[in-house]
Length: 263
Image (tube, rainbow, N blue to C red; front, top):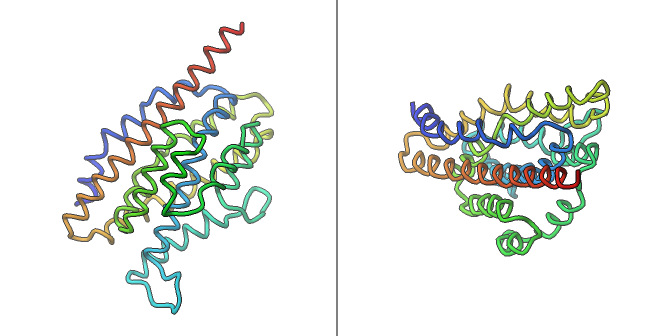
């Protein structure tokens, strides 16, 4: 019952994401390129949320002790296996972040900036300062700052809230549609991007989504305070996602304005 109430409360935020003006602006591979150069930080920080959950909900230290909830621990370990060491379209083991970088290269997006930026994130205690001094726009900084604020709570139910409810599920379908409409060689030209998106849809829709809701239920139980935390942090996570979308939409508008001016 609590999970249904929570989803109803979050629905206005999810509707705002679902109907965001950004989607109407994504109509070419060039737009995908611009989108990916900003969205990649959300792909990277997802892995940090996941590893924080693994540290909180499984035993990664020595001596080993059984997890307090083996079902939740198995769920987290399964996601880590698939997100950190999945197989790409060639059958090579790669993290989804690395697969995303490969897909960015395929559309000629800039990957040097993100790899250099995250290389500078070296210390969890100093990461707020490191993010603030990074060469990122304010929406990207705010998005990452919130993620590590969540991680630094060391509260599994709060981390799980951002992990479960702070993400979007519209982009893969939209990207695939754009790729398929980009000419006869579209899907064959962008094999890495197509594979990444289909894999993302397969895992998030069929497996990870329902299991993540079970994780929230298991972590909160009948604790009203924890359910309130989950609601608060889920709202904030979605709001930062909306602000990130706003910044990408603004960049797309500027790009298209520059193109018109050039003509």
